[in-house]
Length: 143
Image (cartoon, rainbow, N blue to C red; front, top):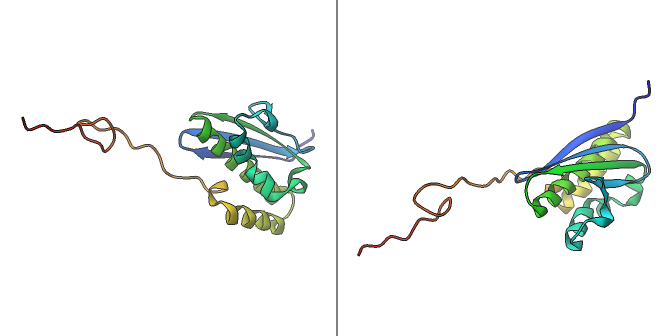
């Protein structure tokens, strides 16, 4: 029985959840079965590639990452995927490479954007009665 070197991590933003499977490979990265180059619009694709651009090609060229994402809207999904990508590479380095290089990766990512490794805890506030939203109230009339 052959045991593959793989890690599974997740990234979250609002209600979007991305699960990344990272294993030894050739630098292949797919999101919901599609290569990164096919993700539209381009501005969101660039946002998605940020952790990869920060770390450099040599850091992830020997791993394959497959990401499944569901829930939330387009932008929340992109942020969940970019967090999952960053966490997957760091977790892979921690488990199968060495602790020192993992620390270097973590420092690089956190110095750029802390949300690449730490989830944003903010959630939507529930709507209450007496108004159209969570805090806004209906206009009051005295006459």
